[in-house]
Image 1: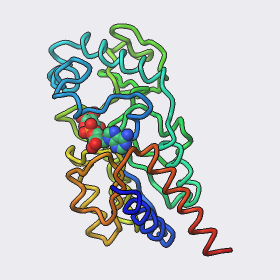
Image 2: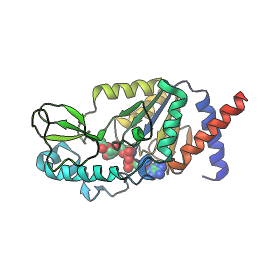
Image 3: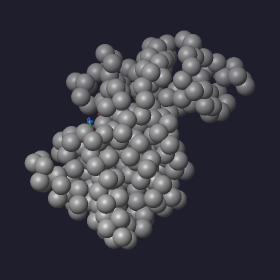
Image 4: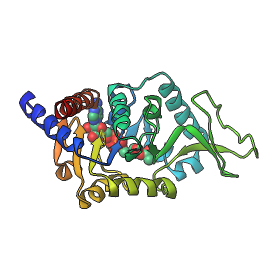
Length: 257
Ligand code: OAD
């Protein structure tokens, strides 16, 4: 995008946001890229050197739970060393303007949105910080401290697994219902840093659009969601979102001042 095209798109996006009563954000791995967390589809089908089906599927877990825990422990250790970037912080700032009329639906499991201060966050693919007992089902927040090779449930001594939605598994019904409510009811959907190819997450874009929401895409490149987007802000989210926030401030100030 040229500077002029970007400026026009930012003005347009800020104008829409200003008149929006309800805002929903769908975020993906790209929003954490500038923090140093690797995205998924930039890695040739390998994820930190592993085949995705070996480390992020129920079959992979049945075959080799130790490998799965090694992989997730490494991801947890990596996330413990990174910080939210200006993109996460801008989303947290946006939430302050809309309060409980703002919902952030994230596919990310790194917890960086919460660390940046976002409150109304639906982590639809789970969280690296949480474990789930394979026997009693209890879910616990374990932070990012090392968990050991095969951690056990403190209640029943069953084997714990990461509380992550793997390929071939369904989403939590309550969390997904809340995401659908947010997408169905928003006036603006911001789609940030996602390739929009993993379902059902990606279906929030057509769902919001069918209800008449304006769709704003923020990404390095065009994606599967781009044809549904009314406005595209193409560049790093850590740059684009603060610029959008600034525009919104200017728009609000010029309208009230
Ligand atoms: P992907 O890796 O598929 O896509 C990342 C997107 O971020 C791409 O569209 C990039 O162009 C974009 N991107 C990269 N750097 C960016 C930046 N600095 N600013 C803005 N955009 C940037 O990740 P997701 O769409 O999140 O599922 O993947 C969805 C799901 O697939 C993940 O939640 C995960 C994965 O398999 C589970 O773990 C269940």
